[in-house]
Length: 299
Image (cartoon, rainbow, N blue to C red; front, side, top):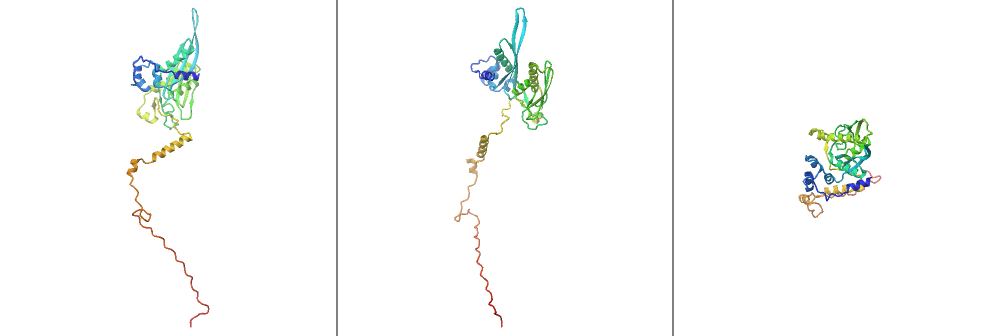
């Protein structure tokens, strides 16, 4: 399954001919990021736009259900496919398609998920955490689909995704690394569970926040652009970083020109203008005291 997903992601888009205004703008290079495409106000109707702007996007098949419909000529069988796509850094989409063949329905469902792509907000919304990195949600969000109700709660760093299996795939592809959840209803229904989780994440984009809240909670919309695990854990890389730091401390030719040259030493080996050092006086040897002769006295 993983190999098939990799093959689908490697399909070339060089022979793509855009048919919409947004597609032509992306093709001409006027729009270079997914955030610009979503904020342009133009409808997203071509999946190739997502493939160009988000080349590292991943997909996951959540459910494959067989549905039947009774007609006069007999049963008609179709397959209902639910998929989720995301780049793991602020963009996620959900697709649901029915088809007669499983493979074709999966491809159509992935394209449908790319057309439903949204940009979410992340931050450090847990009062138990003060790292100020976009690892969780900035505030509580609620979503509902059918009888399924789900509420995502920001969690401190290191907790992980304490949610159901279906919601875990949606949050992981969205770029959320820590979260708690409260669910209610028929949560074993995969389609409704996925839609409720997706609607919860859509609520982060709909919620309006003030600039003061954005600065306090470090709320980030869309891709962060910097890997969160950028700490040096490899000792070889640590040595390289130390070497780079040492090189940065070496003065440049411009800095060296501003430093005054050292004074030339005098003939005695000391620097010019310095007071002459006096040589320590040699200690003279002490003479033995002469003792008076025995019996010698005055008259």
